[in-house]
Length: 304
Image (tube, rainbow, N blue to C red; front, side):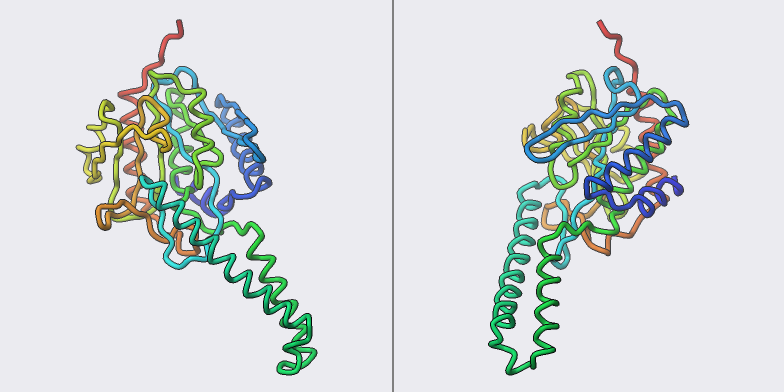
């Protein structure tokens, strides 16, 4: 799995723009073709964006589907950014704070640019320096508005992606690689159109690093294999909320790694250059646990 982590964590570690995501799909599909593994791409246009989900294996009939987002987030300007797998309102709050901060800085830069352009500051800085400052303000303003993908994304979501793709050789396992699943749930909504009520969806979230593993699930889903394992999972029974990934499916589990602070499960240092830590030993153990879980739970449903 180290090779997969190198590929999807470094070589193909940025999957934010349309071009970057299409390149990721092309490389992954080429790998699947060489191994003669069944796959299909399911696309849907939602407003001004096109969602491209990649489904691997017998997605329609497998009892268990392992799902994870393959897109990576935009870099934030906020310090100590946090991600909350179970609190979408806090995630929206952090996104809003980042947007407001960008707008404030942009407004200041535009005001300074106006003063420089109108020669009101040239008497203090001189003509040459004023021109240089004006160009600097224009460039920084452009960067603030421009999509700026985060360059290192081990927790969101390269580790879970490498983990999922390490299981493709098992023909009993179905895998869903979801587009627009990191900062929204649109790709998971598209997956819902394929999933039936008898299938269990295991969502892999931030798994690279963090003190505590959590296994969140609906009350009627058996997760005893995870809870009783030596990986020290924290169990969270989740309510049926339609606006959350777990609430989209009749049977669902979400596995993530982070820490519990003030009764909130959070993941530190996402959407920044600090998202480079990884516990490969634990990731390998989690892979083995998932393989055993699916092996005991994944019988092929006989289509009527």
